[in-house]
Image 1 (cartoon, one colour):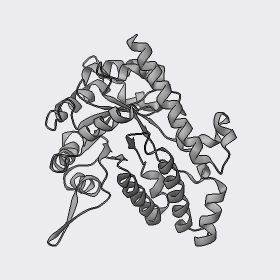
Image 2 (image 1 turned 45 degrees about the vertical axis):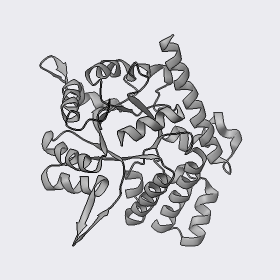
Image 3 (image 1 turned 180 degrees about the vertical axis):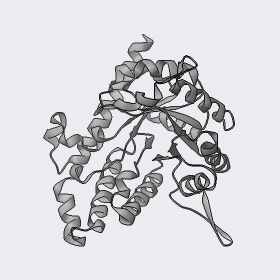
Length: 310
């Protein structure tokens, strides 16, 4: 699957991923009203609104981008009905030939870790049959429990030719409380990055590993260091746009081949119509605003990379 991701990045010239992280506040009133008229102000109605919102955005942007990243918590808040919307979203994005990164941030050990891996990346055995469940292409994983938590995921990834993005240096302000702590003279996130390299050696593609890292756009100098530590790992970079990251901050996350990183924007794209820059589109054309935000993001990153290379 890492080869498909790379091929689609080259084809679209867009090393970006759209985070499908819907909140009801983001969804235009006319979509919510329609869903609530059909299903009431219920969990089912909320999930239907989320699904219709996602579908419209995917329809508007899918040919521009290589990948999407639905954040499962935004769906879990609506319970089982929300998870149904998550599944419909994943399935629809796969129908559109998008690479799906399930932002699930799982982290446990033993059989529990294996069960998470099965649910999101593998197949569950029921009697004599096997079924894919959520069936994402990649999943995000928390490495806090060490190799015991990661190996069950890698075992499933190798069997299914799928991949992981492991949290290394996250974009949130308090990440340094733990991640920046010095151990043997180096910050913890560098030690985690070295483990990502080690884990990745067990599941390599042609030039890049199936095992990547999450490094926030809000820490570009740390990203520069981590790029050198993990030369064969793809880096998923959250924090663009709404969290303050911009194209000029991101050039060091890429390798000299122009690959090696994929930049995420979530509400900066899916709720673009709420920004002053895109307000002229209005609620009815919210998906068109999202499309324009994608085009602007592609241009921003492209210009930054061109300027860096001279």
